[in-house]
Image (cartoon, rainbow, N blue to C red; front, side, top):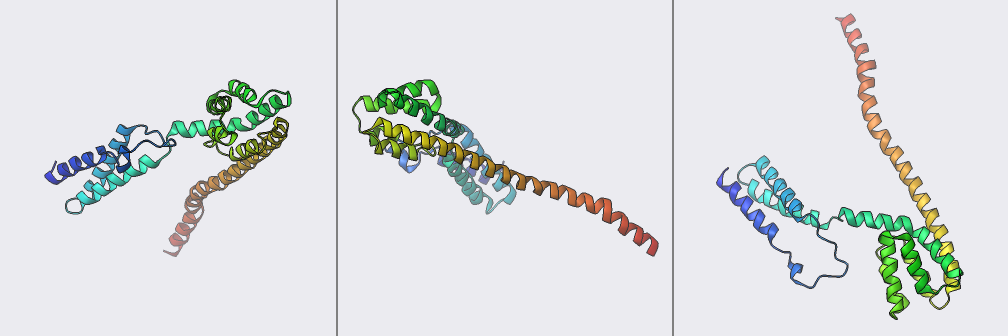
Length: 232
């Protein structure tokens, strides 16, 4: 391996192993977990080496270095798979959680106990967030502060707003939760239908790319060959 390539590899590894400027600060509460640092480093170095090898000497080293650093920054900004899976599971359980919470409140159970019971029944990411909400309410936290544990769940903003507005009346919150559960199910059905329509459009593209060459080869090419053979 040539000297510039070795130097580039060493420099890339050193830059990628250095902590980013904000790493020395106190961690933010909503920071994403950094999963797979070794895999990210390996992929970044491979991308840099590939670009450097394709370009060659001269501009290959700085181009490979830029690609490696850019790849590392891009991979750092991606949402980890486990975080995305938890978010999707919480979104799927949200309508059922709203229905269960409305039923518990209609039965006369206190808000914090209702939330705790629903959290135990649901489990999973949404159950964990509801459990933290119930614990905060028991400790005397304000509703606006306690319900922020659900802020990371998609479409939970309406539930948080309804809970904060109805913090003084469990019955009012139960009615709002029932309506919210119906709206969430309707929105989910609309999203599924839109995704199915997009999938149908995307499926047509590869089919068209496959059928068009086949039509040309099976229909037009024999005709052209026959005409040329007769003319010659």
